[in-house]
Length: 231
Image 1 (cartoon, helix red, strand yellow):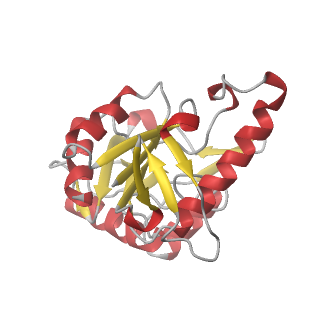
Image 2 (spheres, one colour):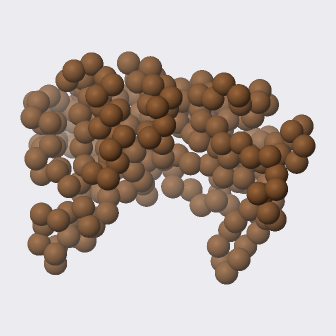
Image 3 (cartoon, helix red, strand yellow):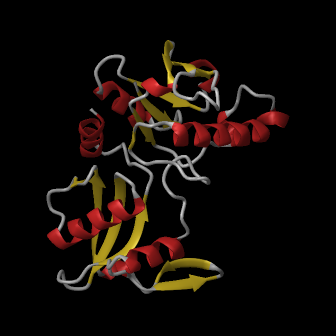
């Protein structure tokens, strides 16, 4: 069973589920979690713990893959909960799923962290420092009112958004050097999915300016690559 975490607004998540063989993947959102996901988890005996996903009974150990298309749940998604309790329920369910996903011993497109359902949740300064430490050139950073952002106007530079999934670069037109940087970053962060934004002055130099750990499943070729990676 492939577990896909998303929200009701992300229609592409449903399309991703439909690309797997029938019954092989199931969508879970905060808005239908009370119906689509039920679990009796034993902390001391996690893998045999029984869960129900999309009406199918299985065990935690039987989950073979995870795709988290959201970084966190939103309070507004818990419309079926009394308004006074929604924030509490949102926090509690988020904490449970971070624990649950962390304990799973299966392939995870973007493993959770202590702060997020999807990816490391690192501050820009943190991942820029880590990238530079492993030899990836980074675009200069500036701070404005305490918020970091790329220095200067990157609109006038050559811009490249590219994605790596399972060690393979999705876009055919990604320059070889950029693809190499992305594989290094994916391995360093232990993130099979990574989307990176590079800028270049003249096409001979490339600098990392932004990145995302949250999968863009709205792009068809990304969905196809995700299915290949988890199948």
